[in-house]
Image (cartoon, rainbow, N blue to C red; front, side, top):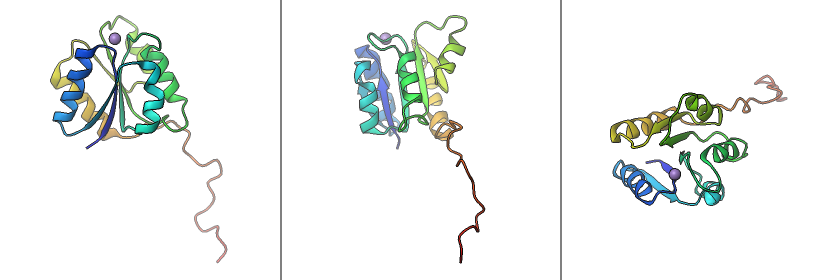
Length: 142
Ligand code: MN
């Protein structure tokens, strides 16, 4: 079971996403106002964040950028969901920090598959986890 934060302003979609995730044994936490998403993510400590792109107030792109620059959340995988995947959106969405995205209306199979793939891949390599000075393993005086 994974903890999954779902950010989506559309009531029907967020119910669908959360129902699907729970049917697959996950713990889904819905957030309908993107302004609450960052603090909700910090306290929920999700294994995966799913976010809509077209959100009022704080867009999905902005939210992903905040997550990626947050100390606690930077390595949490993100799946974006978007209704308007135009040319160039793929790059824009990935550049903002998403590992994957699915278009709305979602295919249930594709949605679930993308979720499981991201959970399997686990934490995102932010390239910032290497110790600055990796000392030799036997550097401790005995
Ligand atoms: Mn929306």
